[in-house]
Amino acid sequence: MVREDENSMKKDQRKKELQQGHRIEAAQTALKETGLKATEPRLAILIALSENHGPFTADEVHKLINKRVCDQATVYRTLTRLVEVGLLRRCEFGDGIARFETAESGHHHHHVVCNQCKRVEVIDDEEIEEIDRFARKRGFSDVSHILEFFGTCPQCR
Amino acid sequence: MVREDENSMKKDQRKKELQQGHRIEAAQTALKETGLKATEPRLAILIALSENHGPFTADEVHKLINKRVCDQATVYRTLTRLVEVGLLRRCEFGDGIARFETAESGHHHHHVVCNQCKRVEVIDDEEIEEIDRFARKRGFSDVSHILEFFGTCPQCR
DNA sequence: CTGCGTGCAAATCATTTGCAGATAA
DNA sequence: TTATCTGCAAATGATTTGCACGCAG
Image 1 (cartoon, each protein chain N blue to C red):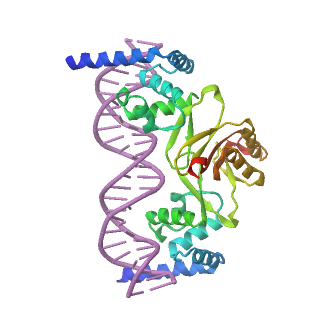
Image 2: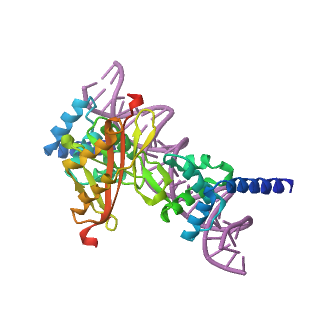
Image 3: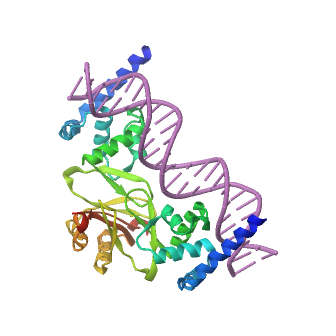
């Protein structure tokens, strides 16, 4: 029981800390709009990803939020759900590990990954989205694409 | 022993069939150029991929060549080697499963995958390769990219 | 209250690896 | 011969799932 009380206290504490931020309402609103329940893991993940740059693996997300917030199975389930409802976006860097980032403002962008230091930089250029026309030319509709760049960054050269 | 003889007979049979094709010499030559030994699994995989369209998963490649030709561990090792030496190319469709196709003629291309029927079409346009400039603009060198399109094909619409 | 969410542990899936025997050059 | 290769089986690593309980609405 002492243990029980300690736990629930810590949990309340965490929730309170969460609520100090401003992003909490945004996250709650966003979840409400999708019809998903606003649970602690979901809020924590949404907030963590809105405060941190670059796409993260499921494991990185789990560390980013406090690991005690939830199980890693929940991290996977949550990431999948949030991608489904469009709050997150999934990126593929070709190494077989899925990475996630916020889909905020709904605008698509890409990354350059340094082959040496693995640093990730955002590439955000309206012009790039035009490439979808290459697929439309073939008669495809509802076209989307995955695009990531790799190279050697200026510092590593 | 009877079993032994049967096996080696079948193996010779397979080799012979292989040699009837014209692609065999090309495959042998290609392997020789890279310094890799011209083994049966490697020849079979090179030939299978040169005769069949579209990128295939390791498992599909294994079925494509006769499964008895080699173990699936060898399929993986072979695919990896052949990509390393540039005879094959690896594609990522964002589902966490690697796919392979021949790198013949050495020119880079992309795919459109139909979200409904999963049919894959090749998109080969010089112009597309220019997108690397978006990464170069950021000071990156040795730039490469992964790019795949998804959509609904004319037949499925 | 009730169904959606979650923890936990076990199950899957793709891919990799260690090692001893087989084979191309 | 001898450095590569391969088969087999076990190990990994990422992700998923079954099930009973927990909690948001």
